[in-house]
Length: 142
Image (cartoon, rainbow, N blue to C red; front, side, top):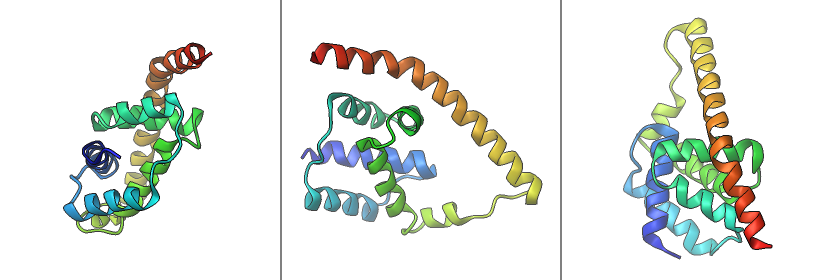
């Protein structure tokens, strides 16, 4: 296991999910999990999604939105769930995740609408970007 890559994944995923940097505690627990669980089997496209998602929070968002619809059981989704579980149990990110949106009912609905439209745009862009790569990786393997 490449600890540098795992640390980069953790930092990127934490920033993507919370907007805050990963704390040393979260990084150590992320690395500890991977050390204890070992390598998970992944196909070529899963490895591609992992490598591209670790580049930046923007790439993580694109890869996540793609995997949410087209690759529900991907290794990327499992790693994002792990990271979310770690950051929602650690300060200061749990405070940000548990915060009630400002603006009452209208503010909540507005944030949901903005988030949904942003996710849809990400899904469309990710589908255009990643579908040809997925097809290529499937064809080249044959």
